[in-house]
Length: 135
Image 1 (cartoon, rainbow, N blue to C red):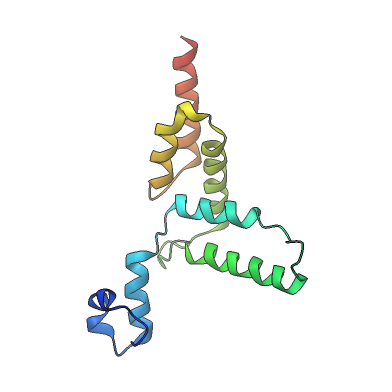
Image 2: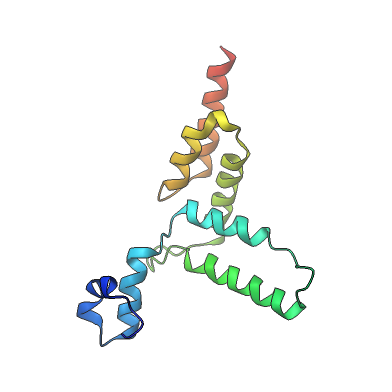
Protein backbone atom coordinates (compact mmCIF):
# COMPACT_ATOMS: atom_id res chain seq x y z
CA UNK A 1 0.00 0.00 0.00
CA UNK A 2 2.63 2.47 -1.09
CA UNK A 3 0.24 5.24 -2.13
CA UNK A 4 -1.65 5.35 1.16
CA UNK A 5 -0.74 8.12 3.56
CA UNK A 6 0.51 6.96 6.95
CA UNK A 7 -2.48 8.34 8.86
CA UNK A 8 -4.84 6.35 6.61
CA UNK A 9 -3.08 3.00 7.02
CA UNK A 10 -4.74 2.48 10.38
CA UNK A 11 -8.05 1.93 8.55
CA UNK A 12 -6.66 -0.86 6.37
CA UNK A 13 -4.11 -2.52 8.62
CA UNK A 14 -6.04 -5.80 8.76
CA UNK A 15 -6.74 -5.82 5.01
CA UNK A 16 -3.48 -4.46 3.61
CA UNK A 17 -2.77 -7.69 1.68
CA UNK A 18 -6.17 -7.55 0.00
CA UNK A 19 -6.59 -4.44 -2.19
CA UNK A 20 -10.33 -4.98 -2.72
CA UNK A 21 -11.00 -5.29 1.02
CA UNK A 22 -8.75 -2.29 1.72
CA UNK A 23 -10.66 -0.18 -0.80
CA UNK A 24 -14.00 -1.26 0.72
CA UNK A 25 -12.74 -0.35 4.19
CA UNK A 26 -11.71 3.14 3.04
CA UNK A 27 -14.94 3.62 1.07
CA UNK A 28 -17.04 2.72 4.11
CA UNK A 29 -15.34 5.55 6.00
CA UNK A 30 -15.15 8.26 3.34
CA UNK A 31 -17.91 7.57 0.80
CA UNK A 32 -21.16 9.10 2.07
CA UNK A 33 -24.00 7.21 0.42
CA UNK A 34 -26.69 9.64 1.54
CA UNK A 35 -29.37 11.44 -0.47
CA UNK A 36 -27.67 14.81 0.03
CA UNK A 37 -24.42 13.55 -1.48
CA UNK A 38 -26.31 12.06 -4.42
CA UNK A 39 -28.21 15.31 -4.93
CA UNK A 40 -24.93 17.24 -5.11
CA UNK A 41 -23.62 14.71 -7.62
CA UNK A 42 -26.79 15.01 -9.73
CA UNK A 43 -26.56 18.79 -9.58
CA UNK A 44 -22.98 18.61 -10.80
CA UNK A 45 -23.95 16.05 -13.47
CA UNK A 46 -26.80 18.12 -14.91
CA UNK A 47 -24.61 21.22 -14.79
CA UNK A 48 -22.01 19.79 -17.15
CA UNK A 49 -21.55 21.93 -20.25
CA UNK A 50 -19.11 21.57 -23.10
CA UNK A 51 -16.20 23.93 -22.58
CA UNK A 52 -15.20 26.11 -25.49
CA UNK A 53 -11.85 24.42 -26.01
CA UNK A 54 -13.03 20.91 -25.05
CA UNK A 55 -13.24 18.01 -27.48
CA UNK A 56 -16.36 15.86 -27.61
CA UNK A 57 -14.36 12.86 -26.38
CA UNK A 58 -13.16 14.87 -23.35
CA UNK A 59 -16.74 15.97 -22.67
CA UNK A 60 -17.90 12.36 -22.89
CA UNK A 61 -15.19 11.34 -20.43
CA UNK A 62 -16.33 14.03 -17.94
CA UNK A 63 -19.96 12.88 -18.27
CA UNK A 64 -18.91 9.25 -17.74
CA UNK A 65 -16.82 10.22 -14.69
CA UNK A 66 -19.73 12.16 -13.18
CA UNK A 67 -22.05 9.19 -13.72
CA UNK A 68 -19.56 6.87 -12.01
CA UNK A 69 -19.60 9.22 -9.02
CA UNK A 70 -23.41 9.05 -8.90
CA UNK A 71 -23.35 5.25 -9.08
CA UNK A 72 -20.75 5.05 -6.29
CA UNK A 73 -23.05 7.11 -4.06
CA UNK A 74 -26.03 4.78 -4.43
CA UNK A 75 -26.81 2.54 -1.45
CA UNK A 76 -25.15 -0.84 -1.86
CA UNK A 77 -27.44 -3.00 0.28
CA UNK A 78 -27.93 -6.25 -1.65
CA UNK A 79 -31.07 -7.13 0.34
CA UNK A 80 -32.68 -3.78 -0.52
CA UNK A 81 -31.30 -2.68 -3.91
CA UNK A 82 -31.57 0.89 -5.18
CA UNK A 83 -34.40 0.93 -7.73
CA UNK A 84 -35.91 3.36 -10.22
CA UNK A 85 -38.74 3.91 -7.72
CA UNK A 86 -36.15 4.92 -5.10
CA UNK A 87 -34.57 7.28 -7.61
CA UNK A 88 -37.96 8.77 -8.50
CA UNK A 89 -38.76 9.37 -4.81
CA UNK A 90 -35.37 10.96 -4.18
CA UNK A 91 -35.62 13.22 -7.21
CA UNK A 92 -39.07 14.47 -6.17
CA UNK A 93 -37.83 15.02 -2.61
CA UNK A 94 -34.67 16.74 -3.74
CA UNK A 95 -36.51 18.97 -6.18
CA UNK A 96 -38.96 20.03 -3.46
CA UNK A 97 -36.12 20.73 -1.04
CA UNK A 98 -34.05 22.53 -3.69
CA UNK A 99 -36.97 24.74 -4.70
CA UNK A 100 -37.70 26.02 -1.19
CA UNK A 101 -36.65 29.57 -0.27
CA UNK A 102 -34.05 30.41 2.39
CA UNK A 103 -36.64 30.51 5.18
CA UNK A 104 -36.86 26.72 4.93
CA UNK A 105 -33.12 26.20 5.41
CA UNK A 106 -33.65 24.31 8.69
CA UNK A 107 -35.75 21.79 6.80
CA UNK A 108 -33.51 21.52 3.75
CA UNK A 109 -30.32 20.85 5.72
CA UNK A 110 -32.11 18.26 7.86
CA UNK A 111 -33.57 16.44 4.84
CA UNK A 112 -30.32 16.43 2.89
CA UNK A 113 -28.51 14.60 5.68
CA UNK A 114 -31.12 11.92 6.36
CA UNK A 115 -30.32 8.38 5.33
CA UNK A 116 -33.59 7.99 3.43
CA UNK A 117 -35.94 10.54 2.04
CA UNK A 118 -39.50 9.79 1.15
CA UNK A 119 -41.57 11.82 -1.25
CA UNK A 120 -44.59 11.68 1.06
CA UNK A 121 -42.57 12.94 4.05
CA UNK A 122 -41.24 15.93 2.13
CA UNK A 123 -44.61 16.73 0.59
CA UNK A 124 -46.37 16.44 3.95
CA UNK A 125 -43.85 18.73 5.62
CA UNK A 126 -44.26 21.41 2.95
CA UNK A 127 -48.06 21.21 3.16
CA UNK A 128 -48.08 21.36 6.99
CA UNK A 129 -45.74 24.35 6.95
CA UNK A 130 -47.90 26.05 4.35
CA UNK A 131 -51.04 25.53 6.49
CA UNK A 132 -49.28 27.04 9.50
CA UNK A 133 -48.37 30.13 7.46
CA UNK A 134 -51.99 30.57 6.31
CA UNK A 135 -53.29 30.78 9.90
